[in-house]
Length: 344
Ligand code: NDP
Image 1 (cartoon, rainbow, N blue to C red):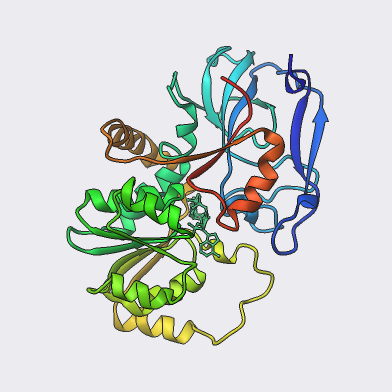
Image 2: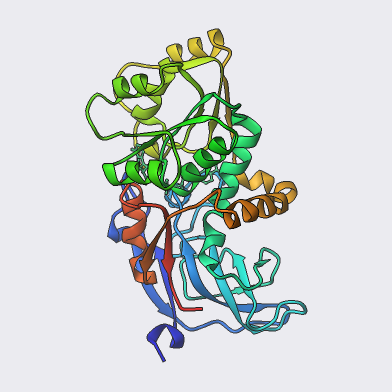
């Protein structure tokens, strides 16, 4: 029996980060494994998803993606879990479920927020291409991006789960897709494995110039995952009638004060006005009720048919989740970041 079979290990929020999170902001604890009450199940976490919104909920903020994590409480997170004990009328011991058990080995649930998965060859895919990030790309590209054949689509964080799926969906619609990623390996992957037409390394010099050269007909859709310097390079290249689904702004998640430099707001609004640009935010929680089933069906077919693929960046062990999350905020992940917590 391993240690984590005898106790519930959990990673709690020890302190609210000031800027970039540090190891001191997390604490690994061991507590007793809880017992399910009437109507509850006990879940064993198999895979934990690590996602950029987790940085936001470490702050004391109004709930947008998830409620703020209380000090001393386990970090929140999407999980694939196995039901190991059930006092629930419909869920059985052995069921594989998608849920939000957070950064811990075991959790109780009343079943309301659980999504039964059946048996899957690779259950961790339910956290990536077939889960929340893939769903985010699917809704934002279909509803806001709406790329047409021959249009130029630019996608930042191109090898992460949202960007990788967004770019492949634009390719399926016949668009020309320009990815942006941090590093040569990621860019090679975006072109060779994901089928992007071009991918630019955002860390190499003269990024704005290289982006302009890669988009000779301007940009029709910019799928915004990051903000910061990438958006500054994109803005002058947007075409009349461009669409900008605003999905994430990871370049700013660790900001403590507004970034220095000129105030770009007037030039942003001038471009929005004169070029009739549609800039629209999207929070995926709004769409589970009416779109998740169609997404699972469509994406399931595309994945099975080899039309959409996603690399996973698998981290071994719950205790390594803090380091992995800190790395993601610096672009050290390569693909969908998932923690393997226990064997299925
Ligand atoms: P990723 O796996 O793509 O991880 C984040 C990536 O962002 C990093 O790997 C890095 O990629 C890039 N990055 C980090 N810092 C910077 C920076 N300063 N400037 C530019 N790029 C940076 O994450 P996801 O695919 O899960 O998420 C992508 C975005 O979508 C995030 O902003 C996230 O918050 C957002 N999101 C929003 C949702 C919603 O409902 N609105 C739902 C899900 C995600 P690289 O090094 O390759 O540039």
